[in-house]
Structure formats: C-alpha cells, structure tokens
Amino acid sequence: MLPKVLVVAVGNPDRADDGVGALAATGLAGRLPPDVSLVARRGDILSLIEEWAGFDAVIFIDAAASMGMPGRIHRIDAGAGELPNEVSFASSHAFGLAEAIALAAALRSLPDTVIVYAIEGASFDGGAAMTPEVTAAAAEVADRVVAEVGRLRCREGKVMSDA
Image 1 (cartoon, rainbow, N blue to C red):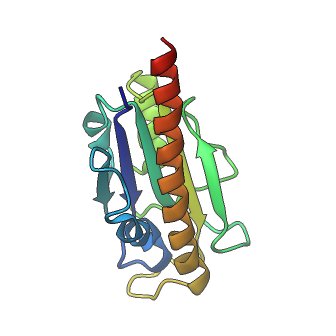
Image 2 (cartoon, one colour):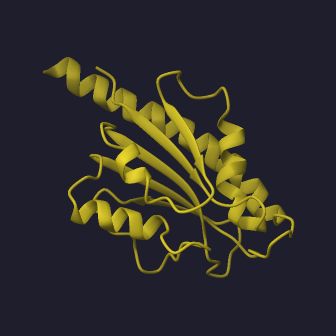
C-alpha cells in the first residue's frame, strides 16, 4: 500500500519572497500522482494539524529568512518535531510552520515523515516582486518535491512488499 502524502505550500504571494510556496505549488500542478494531496496556505497553518491526520508523510514548502544567500534551499527532516534554530521561517502570522510542527510533536500528532523545503528569501515587503533567485529556487523545489514523493512511494512499496 502506498503512503498517503500531503504537500503543503505555505506563504503569502502578496509579500514578495514569502510567496515562494505558492509559486512552487503552481510548478507542481499536474506533476504529482493523483492520490497525493496538494494544498496552499496563506495564513495561519494551525488548522493543518487536523488536516494532516491520517497522512503518512507531509512535505512543506516555505520561505525562510535570509541567512545571506537568497534562493538557497534547505531540506529539513522535521520528523523529530524540531526545526533547526539556524533556519528562521518567515511568517507574518502569529502561528507559523515551526510552531505548528512543535505543537503537533507535543500532541504526538505528526505524521511519520515530515520534510520541509525552506527557501531563503530577501524581500518580504507587501506588494514587492519576488526576487529572481527565489523565483528560480521555486522551480527547483518543485522538481525536488516530485522526486521526494517518488522516493517515499518507492521506499514504502519495498517495505510493504517485503512484509
């Protein structure tokens, strides 16, 4: 049996680089297997804790504050429930991705696999255009998510067939 996978694109397209999740989601359209769910969230993602119930894996795409290299992609295995301190997620909302993962871990409601693709941004100003480096990174992350879903499905398929 294939794992149930949820892909969540986080961010506000009206706030420059914060919209990278939405742009990556556009790049994923039609590229994921039909049984993989793709959702976009602009605001508070606390409600996702209930939404990801029943999924075996969740993959997030979100903007991160710049650490000096806009467009740099970080792949984080957050299944343990903690995101590294060196990556700060850009959120204009009270409850962002890091807080939702931490709460879900405390409630023991995280899926078995939680992967975060964080893309460093440079500008988060309202009405500003996305920076070219971040725009390019969105396309690369879409490709990586397609590959990640394939790996998850192959890994689970082998595990299930070995049983």
